[in-house]
Length: 208
Image (tube, rainbow, N blue to C red):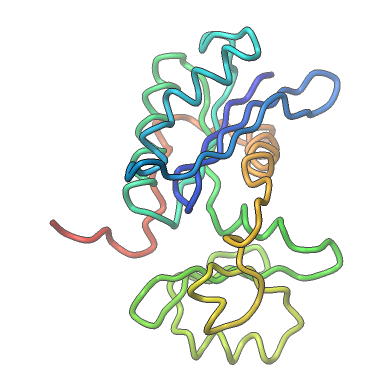
């Protein structure tokens, strides 16, 4: 099985290619940042083509797709989901969606319980702990929860200033590789039909 995964929801774009050939392994992994006033998702197709070419593959060699479905940049979520659905439909392969909150929870040290809080604006954060998405939660409620438990908190730069924790934006974490592993695990137990792949909008996108 060969799996292509990509994520345009966060501050950088992650694209990775993995395979299950007597064991799971990452074949290629790329991190792309915004360039020349262009949002990184503008480079998604060219990056996918580059990774496939490096591995002497064509799209028809892929067996599955995995993506980050959000929360994150509304533009990035739309781009990610649209490209995945189109590719999966044309190739007739499954497509697995993983939330950014679950992905980020896996950069926590192994001996710590993970919690993730990402800026949701309006004095709220998208909150995740104990394997569950809690929704957009007021910051005061998150502070009270964290004070009562021993959690390792992953945040973004803005939430780090308010809640503390570790900002994923300050390091080059292998989020594409993590996404690939999570998508692979989901695909083993779920049909992951591309028709069911939808953006995760915890709050509605801005109008206009």
